[in-house]
Length: 199
Image (cartoon, rainbow, N blue to C red):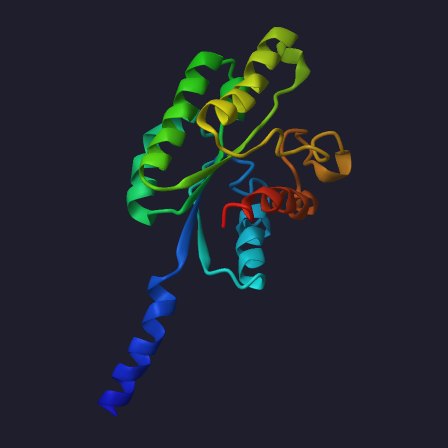
């Protein structure tokens, strides 16, 4: 009986130890704000990976309201804890909404990306936009950070994660800032289209 149990344990060991890791470092957009966590695009991505027969585990390190500075303060712990093969970086929107200096946001995101790369992870940068009422100059400075970083650090990116969502009232919550449950599958598929090239 003991030999049988040992054999079973050994047989199961590879499936436990060989799973690769994906860390999602984000804010409310990735933290499933306003809905059950299981409804969010990150949870849907885990389901998609399983359906595709890909042995990856997704760790959601997203916190509603977080800024690029908050992500920078947390990235080392996330890298140490999960040893990710891939990092999905979705931060910056709260920097913009709070009117924080775009230069500081760029520096924070750059450091997060570099630390992730140094830890052996590939990075997919998920770009965001802020409402036009912040003024064209500030909005352009904010938005241009993502393509600049993608080009400079040679990483793939999604220019605007909420493209085809943000301006559709049926896809947004009442606050006009957060996508609703209906939008989550669309967001996941947008991420998947870029992510699958990194797997």
